Amino acid sequence: AIRYEPHPNDAQITGARAAAVAALSRSELFLVCMAGAIWGTFNGCFTVFFSFAPSLLVSNADISAATAGVVVGVAIWCVVVSVQVGGVLGQCRVRPAVLMIIGTVAWSLCLLALALWASAGAAAVILAGLLMGLPVGAIMAMPAEVLRPESRAIGMGYFYLWLYVG
Image (tube, rainbow, N blue to C red):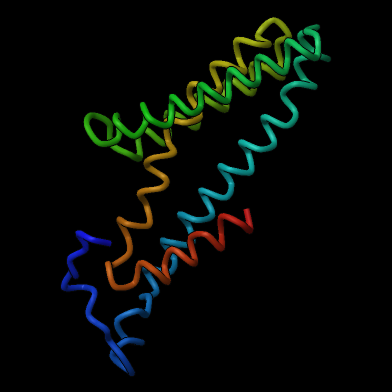
């Protein structure tokens, strides 16, 4: 608060001009809703995976419930690390779309391995944790890529609407 300096975009806009500036184009609306749907689906898959992984490990991989809980906990911490790695890769070296495809397909293959081969068990869950965070930065950057600065507030509302629907 002490060091705040107003930005030129902070000017108050009222009336019809405010509605025109804040209105989303059809293209912006479609793209930000798609980004929100992707993010909602991703979060839904994350939740379902980590909700059922302990039971799957106990039943398929013959691991104790306590060990399965530890494996899932480690995998969730791996997600935290891989989100950061994915953000760095997306900024420096890898195109975001490629990062999203690689992370999502590799994560899906880990899920398939977990379902089909009991021996994959804990390794598949931890590897999934390492891979599933890679596309997060690219997904979260989508709204800023498609929305004009003056329409971001409304656009982010639509983005989060679809997140919560997902």
